[in-house]
Length: 73
Image (cartoon, rainbow, N blue to C red; front, top):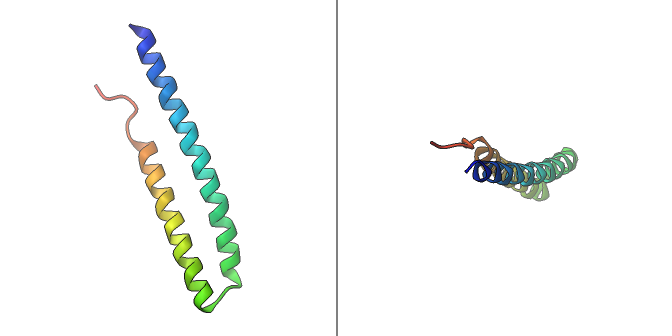
């Protein structure tokens, strides 16, 4: 019955890798948008700030998922 646990663990690991890959993409987007924001003002700056906020929220949701315990007994 040990195979089941191992499979579940691999599954979790795979989900972790997917989450980490998504976080990586979000981080890169955030960096680009923050750099853009440095020299963007007015209405366009406001829109950028909203995009950054959305990305940050998305990132937080993903890190929350990652923090959930892997094993529930």
